[in-house]
Length: 378
View 1 (cartoon, rainbow, N blue to C red):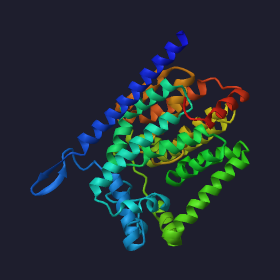
View 2 (view 1 turned 90 degrees about the vertical axis):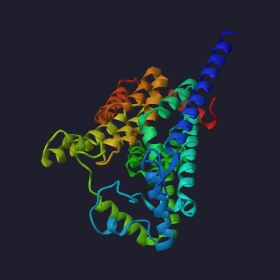
View 3 (view 1 turned 180 degrees about the horizontal axis):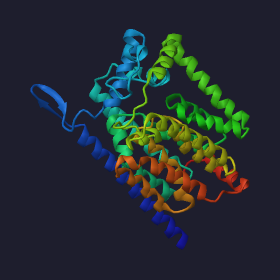
View 4 (view 1 turned 30 degrees about the horizontal axis):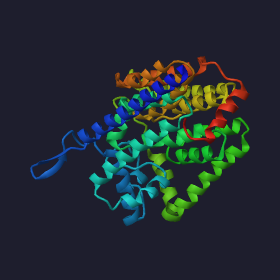
């Protein structure tokens, strides 16, 4: 009887958490999507931040249809700072996938994109292989975080990527997980560190599924964009200038620039950040596979020179694991995202530290836990 009451309480609390999160996200949508007419022109009440990124994605898809290229000529031909109006610097698969939206009104697309990402976030939290109350608390924590609000308002792709990463976690070392990981890598190449992690663990079949899916995505998108589309993508990546002091970039190099260090020291800091990320991935090989997965995911953010603050939304996964194995209070770190943005690198490093402090689990227990992924969330 006591067990039944505990389960009922958990279910009620969890249901409240999921409902609260959805209501909160609905409020963000209603507030930021409001429009008014100013001097005969329809504008957004809270400014142009709303739909800034998704507008760039959809316009890139429109360029693909009309001009045959996702990328602006100025990105292909000369150095540029990321974040500019209508700049698209993702790989072709995402742009190809968004072609069906390119013919719709931009306001409708922005609302649809917001709803789609909110539902994807809900699905991601429901699928997490952790206790039900932790799933609900994670959903609430992510929903009220600055990282999620910033991502959702801009229309970035980050929140959407949480879902395939959770699938990769839940079905770890299984084909479905590898397919989801490949889809994530196609949009955010830094997560390719997890493919390297698979190879380092000698999970050859799992890595083959990841590589095979990646090749399939390249081939299928190349049918639409052609080889020139991928040549343009390589040029765009090569021309991208790493944002420094005064920008929204929060990698350790940009942090060093903000502190006033000269270019030589900034380069050394970035090299040190990459070396630290690699070392943490290697040390993570000694942990159980779930911990190793989370360590690699978090460490991958140290290996790239561009980390917009809202990219840290991916920390929801390791924090959920920490909450499940240790203390749910650790999810308050999601709320700390509202602190000054300079704190962002510290939150990333603190998450990594906690992952290493957490005791590893025996291989048989970790395997049993992964086996539960075959069913739906309890």
